[in-house]
Image (cartoon, rainbow, N blue to C red):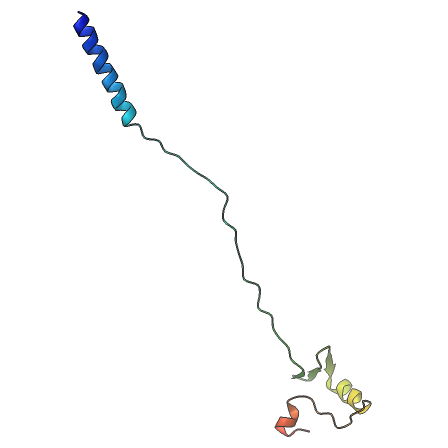
Length: 90
């Protein structure tokens, strides 16, 4: 009788160890999302010159009449806007 109890105890322990060895552990790790880096928007560079019927001098836009009046009152009466001398327009 002692032998059967001992055999039953050993087989129960073996079954317990077997179940413990086959246990599956599933872990879920939810972390913070990584940093999002965006590229800066492209910057349009506007250089002095005529844009349609307006002249940009680097500081402000002038209408054609205002620009011509401004140039008549300036020191250099023969001023030609950039790019126009190359085209022979001055």
